[in-house]
Length: 376
Image (cartoon, rainbow, N blue to C red; front, side, top):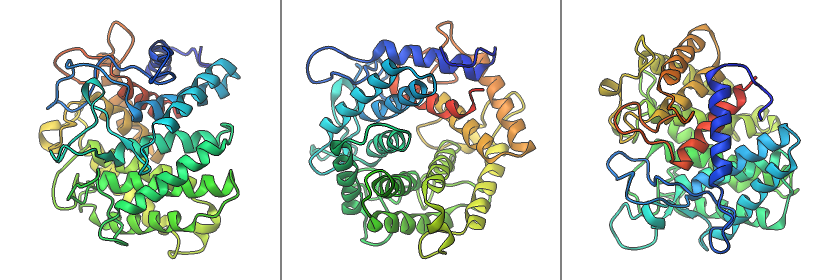
């Protein structure tokens, strides 16, 4: 059990998702030993949830980190061992170029551009790096394989920055778009890799920190006047990806050493610039919440994330992390709506309407990570 037994939606959901992830961790001999089986495969509503499950790389990154943090908090060595096995699976699955595939239905890797070629994903890679790097900063044994894994991932990010030195990191290999969430995932990952290599492995990696800074300086000015971070640099109003950009920004800013922040904008934007961007984004997010806690999808979401419950949870996370009465009130409103949607299984559904779908492991694992900081 988690340490909190209070009758609230955050604690209940955290416990149910933890139990679910333990149930679906795959210990069958062979290729997927240590990973997590997802009965429902992909998250985009334009794709078929029921077309066959998969062992997602990004889901394993989130699930492994969640189990590590819970195990450490509760002094549960078995839970921590589960997490370590999952991280070992991920290091074995790293592509030779340094990233990870985005896995869709029936274990197939994504082919967003329709080339028929393999396509390493910035998003999957970033969730893996977030999980592994954060766990290492929280006591995961510092194996050589983990060091090599993170360093190779960092080099892969640098290989896809295009134009070189621009701070633009595409959503996946061969993508032609300046996508803000991919940029901020890369910012977080590169800053985290640099910090882990220095603090855990005593290895300098200034090129990764500088790449993170380049991308953040490129992306912050793309925020709209109303506070929205659009899906792409030129269009796409979105609640989902505004919250995701903020989540990555919080994570990156928390991991960058204070000595670099104090050294000025040669290393990192000022805290005033970052706080201004966060406050504007929260103003936008609050405007997207109806009185009943539902989100104003038709007005403020043009991406395929429309109606995903995942969006509610990540928005709660960034509002609570920002703090202030207005943000806390909006988060409380969202949580009330979320509580009304919890299924008989105890798990949140994947969408706020339509078919009840719960067994999508990577979305549940992400939700658990969004809520864990607020378990009392």
